[in-house]
Length: 164
Image (tube, rainbow, N blue to C red; front, side):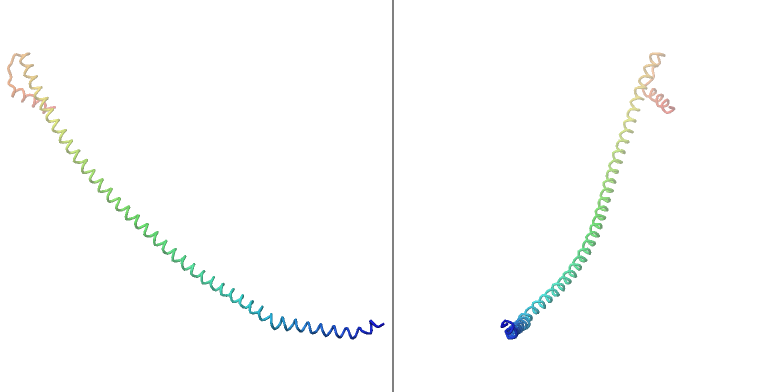
């Protein structure tokens, strides 16, 4: 069979072209494309490493910023507490001063009222003694017919009031 006789010649020819194609693919990919792929992978790895380093640096800076923020917040709280304490002290001092002023005014008013009351009491007692002296004078004149002077009646009323 002639087809089988040609099989050796055709197989060698096909084997040759297969080796030639594989060699072109191997050297084409291995020498031309593989270095480009490897440089892309290396660049990607370098970029990832740089990004990780930048992220670590950013994290360190963020932690430092957060610590500074916490420190400022603590200082602000301490200042606020101190300001509140000072304000309370000032308010207490002002309130105490107002209370002392009000107490002094009330004491003055009480003293004035007491003096006024004493003056009124003295005036009322004087009026009562005067009225009592007039009444004694009139009663003695009517009941006994004795004439008593106003000064004698006043002395008798004063003596009676002193015993009460």
